[in-house]
Length: 414
Image (cartoon, rainbow, N blue to C red; front, side):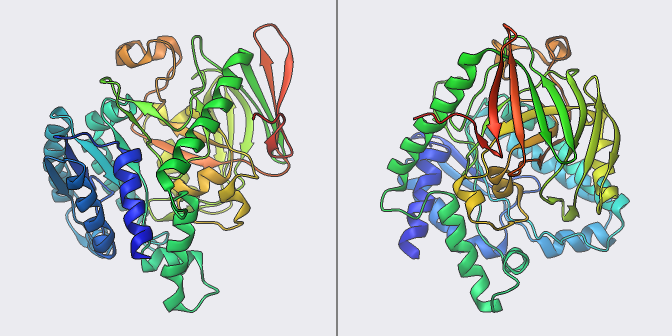
């Protein structure tokens, strides 16, 4: 296992953020601090970072138990002030060209039983403090990557059928498998994986899609695409031309929808764990892009806190396509972690768009709305894929092209 974790750490440094000699490396920031159970793996990340020529490695240590108790009983005003102070340091390193790694591994039940108003206030204040930093992250102005490592609380949720002592090792095995980090040469495996995803996005771009139509039980939704949009996949480039991979794992091909071009109803197919609250069977109804009705079988208050966060959180910012025969989906396990669950299912994101239109990186935020891009402090993915999902595309010429049938790609791309 030690050798596997060393390869995983090397993958994060060389493929994830693609760290360049002389660059700062930040591990953990904002609500994604490094947890005590991650110390051993983070030390491997630190070693791999310095081996690749890092000038300085900054680690932001945290503790979920402390966070829960603080949200429950502490001064939220002081917590907000602390977040603003931390954001200043994060932003300073960003200005100096740092690369960023985060390890999302939140206890799915972290805030269970707490006042949802306090939870929402605490999480929003931290998000707000990082708003300017996250704008640059959305714009890919620096390299960043999300990957993960187990905690006991997370493993307990995912593997309740196993003896407690076997749960963390089981989660490690599945994380490495999902991340394509379990083979002899994960870096070579990822280079091939990136090529395959790009073939898929190239095919979608060749179609000239004007709108998508989703149909499955509880879902009848049309999504129009903005002018000049394009599909993309795993690999991104900084303004300096350095390629990086924001998500490890990733199985998606995605684009930005037209802010005002979403109509109909969509129902989620997998639970969404958001800030320690579980939202199940959420249903949204859209008119001209805006969410006008919403409900959930459980976790409605948490869903409300997402949608009512700001005006932009009433709109979508991402449409992503993932087949139900993806390697992660075929594992047949719910991870209660969006980084993994979104790569087992087609998904949409409430809130902030990625500026995936021609010239989008240089487009001022004041021009986003005019070009159909949505702006919000939120970006929350929820899963809508299933073996019953069909998706059709209508092209610019009016041709209807099947994109998904029974949850999988309608056409193989080799």
